[in-house]
Image (cartoon, rainbow over all chains, first blue to last red; front, top):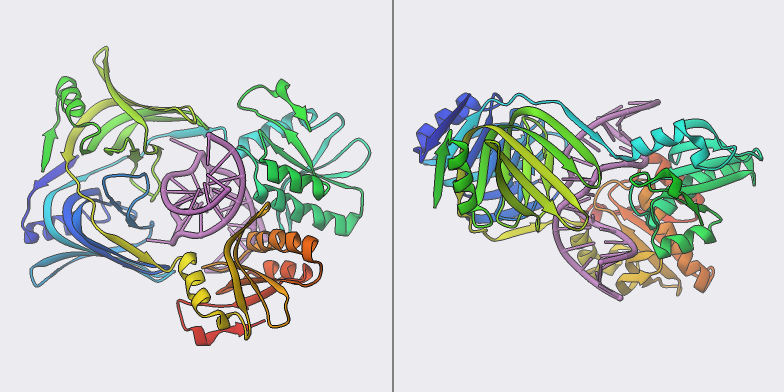
Length: 242
Length: 242
DNA sequence: GAATCTATATCGTGC
DNA sequence: GCACGATGTAGATTC
């Protein structure tokens, strides 16, 4: 199920890594320096760090703080180990985009390797789940609202939900699971303008979110769009229109 | 510098964790199930996973693939360990937003704890670095271009770079380090419209990026904006205007 | 704390 | 493979 190697020599480490790479989940705690060249360029001086090598090619390097790694390489990366002049080097290369991450191991404290079998994982509360709920209960938007399509494709992006209101207007709806900002308004406006160009004035644009920033609300009103406050994490009955 | 605990009892694990929490970098490989309730809600069935507890309160849970953790809690989280009915539980609670992550440890294979001293880290090639370069070499935009301000604040967002051209027009510039899409065009348009409202027609909007998607270019042209191809990862002399 | 934006974003989906 | 948008985005910056 798992192996632990304490303070291995470079030779031992190299053999161990090569036998486990692409097969198991490897964790290395070591002093190392790191170079990355690709979409950007970075350099990390020698320090102790935690290195994770996943079986899908993912490489993750963590320091003592933050959720985000210091350096990384995404899934699909080719990982290999070299011993050059007695120095152990992990090289992780990606083709597209062309990116190279090199970890120079100065002192290895430990290496572990383990089999992992992923388990079931479920998550709810995403934007998707909100749209689901509205499709099943269109009255949440307003009386007489009817759904035409979901993820409706236009040249300027996909509309979360497209419908018609009781007076026959097209209704373009953009959902946000958290407080909506300027970007959400711009996004809705892109879809809205596309429909206005085609159907003229018989079009409405509604931003549906639990909240909206002050500047975003200003912009939204100026552009002739509407805001519908909807917090499905609380109660649907708390719906309120602005 | 580091400690390794192999297949500890729950009591041993609890004592060890409590002595190291908030002080060192802890790595646990264990069978566990996980519940998360907060901005969303998730549930992970029992499976073997890698758990990282950082000294700043960060919690990260990895499975066998992907760069992104299955579950996590950002820095500043309060982490505690409980032994209830012989079951070891790690609870990570955050105040704002209110979020709780609970890890139910079923079988612990190993725990390690290590001191980490972060090292120097430098990175270049970000959008920031491109703007830096253009500020020092304004001719890159065009002959006679003069910089007025950087990160210029408007109610509708911060303009990357504001300047004037040789004919006295305001020039609003948005930079993208990678291929620009619809969102980048909308963003520039927001800033551009704000200036148009104030200064009328003596305003230009330029999107500066190494490339642009086809639909984004269509939209940009329709909105009366300009695109400047600039790839500083290659050569400044490769500048080309569309 | 609120708002805004970048990121080596990553990831999923649809064409 | 490209384009587009969501993410429990995280993280930095500014106000």
